[in-house]
Image (cartoon, rainbow, N blue to C red; front, top):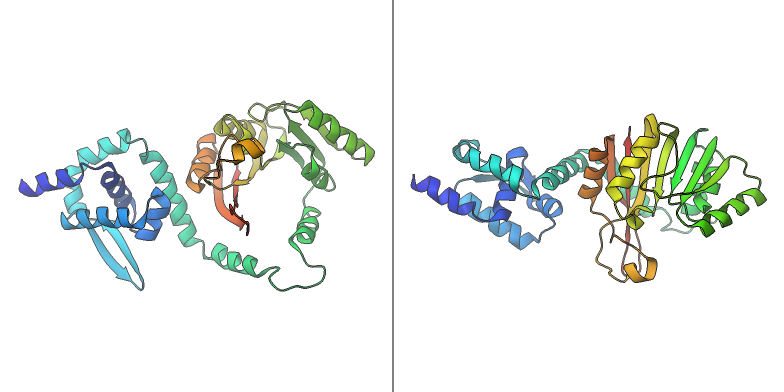
Length: 306
C-alpha cells in the first residue's frame, strides 16, 4: 500500500501524468519529449526523475541518448487513474498526436538525409542555380489536374500552377484581389484560371471536384483553420491531396498588426491532428525552411490524402 500511495502522490502533477501517458505508448528520449510537450529540458528531466524514483518509469542508454519507458507492472496498479487522465486531461489527445508525429520522424531517415542535402543547396554559388529556378522547373512537371488555390490573394502562385494544370480555381475573400488577379489572368491568356470571391472556410467549389487543395501562407488568416481544412477535404475527389504551406508556431506578436495574421503559425503536432480530424490519411508534416533574419520564421509543410 505505501508504494501505491507514493505513486499516487507522484501523479498529482498534470505534467507527470502527461509524461506517463506518453511513456505507456512508446519509449522516448528527453529531446523527443521536449518536442512533444513543448516544455523545457529541466522541467521534463525533473519530472522523469521523480517518476523513476517512485518506480513508475525505467531508463536505458543507447549511445548518447537515454530512452525512458513506463514499467508495466507498476502501471497496471494505477490503470483506472491513467484511463481517467487520458479522457480528462485537455492535452492528452494533442500529446498522442505529437507522439505519432515524432515517431514518424524517427523512422523517416530518408527525410533527415534530404534535409541535410537541402541545407547545402545554394550554399556554394553556381551561376543560374536557385530555389526559384528549381521551383519553376518542378511546377512544369505537375500532371494536368484541377487545383483549388485557397486564399490565393492576387494569385501569383495560381498563375504559375495554371501553366501545367487542367484548371485552377483561385479563391480569395477580397473582391479587389479577385478583380486584379482575374484581369491579370486574362491579360496573360490563362483561360484555365478562374478567380472566385469566397471564404476559405467554406469555398464556393463543388464537393468532390478538385484533385489538389492548396493553402499557401493562407491558413493563419482563417478564423477557424480546422474548418478550412475540413472544407478542403469536402471539395477533394477521393485520392485527392491537400498541401499546406504555412508558418510554424512562433511568438512574433507584431505579425498580427503588420501582416493581419490571426494565428501565430502552427505547431507540427497541431497541424497533423487538424488533418487527421478532417479525415485525411498518409499525413506528412515537417519544417522545410527557416529564414536567416529575425524573427527567423520557419515554414511548415503538411500533406495528406483523402
